[in-house]
Image (tube, rainbow, N blue to C red; front, side, top):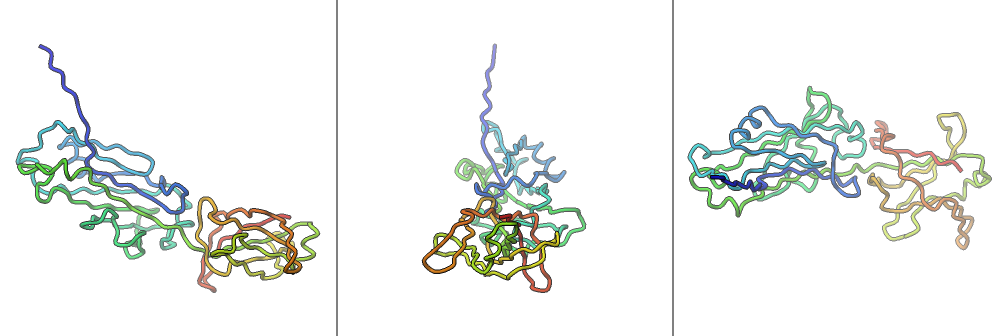
Length: 279
């Protein structure tokens, strides 16, 4: 006699990471690991894990009978998310500390694993470990709502979804304009601004300065801090304006400054990022 058995998988729980720096909001800058205790208990329950670019998913056999006292009681799970992007702090609104651990835990009635819209500084702590590590502590089945003798609600409660949302860093942008162009002789009339004046970004000319290579360049600094984005949300241009009625567009779209140039100025107590523009 042949017995056919079809395994039907059901999502139990997931942890997803998002970041508003990226145009698609998905953050693939972390690898997922779990504690030895968590790995052991998941094996005992027959729960398997699956990793995607920005999430980890726990999956159970939907046909398995968990209605037994041996599956009862709270299931405590610990996950470690290890950062693998060395430039992460440059574009992320976190303490500018290379070694830190961020503590996440479930907040009742909330999908996010933190109390604010984005990861707050309050849950970031200096660590002896190298790099940025997120620790996620979860506890499920406290009332046998998923496993054990009283798990009739399981299908109504699954899947359990948790998310982490990082925010882009706001910094002051610097543009250094230099080169042999004749327009450099008219530096007093050069301007950087956004064509659309609604919520426009203002840049202030700081005049001619010495560049690292010893040559002269014209420095512009944003009047206010601007969020760093993978792709620009506003188009900034370089213009030559000699009077109100004439406008000569030299560069239609300036590049976003490279996040690798982010640095903290202790004197001004501000973060800056810079880009060099050759004309």
